[in-house]
Length: 265
Image 1 (cartoon, rainbow, N blue to C red):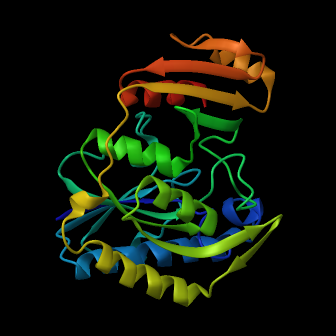
Image 2: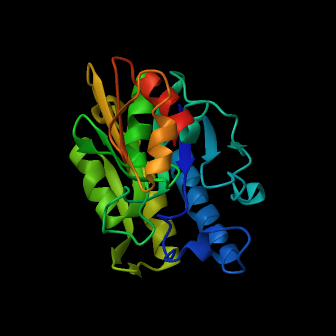
């Protein structure tokens, strides 16, 4: 049983301000350590459930955050960005039995995490078939292209609620809740314990209960914070500019949506 882990930092317990998520700031080290600890807990839970191989995709910012020496020796760590449209799910393929998402966060436009955003942060929101899309939703769809279910997610409470709306059987661990510019967080060690136990339980039984069915067609709207970005993005093939801050795109294959995201976000 091969397991794929995609890890971010804005949904790690404790992170509240952008300074805590960026390598250039002195506050960052403490939260890099916690990100690594939560990912390690997911690895340990997967191994306890019988995983025979684990790929960890460092999927925050530079993708050079997780400390490899803190992970189990049987894990592989994918650092940096190759440029593939799968982005935070780079390397996912049908050989994986399930995906675990650690440290995920609420979507752009949500009020449930002071660090809420989607993808690059240049957008005010992304809609797919009329639904406001988080990175969780986008990456769950990417996994579904390979027939791989998402079995477990951790992050802020708003993201966890949204994730369970998409996958009712999904196991989640909410490590924080955002209120305005503040967060209420569970203890770092408690987060580690709950993640380890939750992953082990999530990977028991038929994992196909977590697999979603992709829509037959995708209608995408991206509203940018700056009209200049919308204008330049409108020159991507198939993209229209229905109003100054918003672009529109349609496709029958979600990979084409991901390819478009790679060039306009």
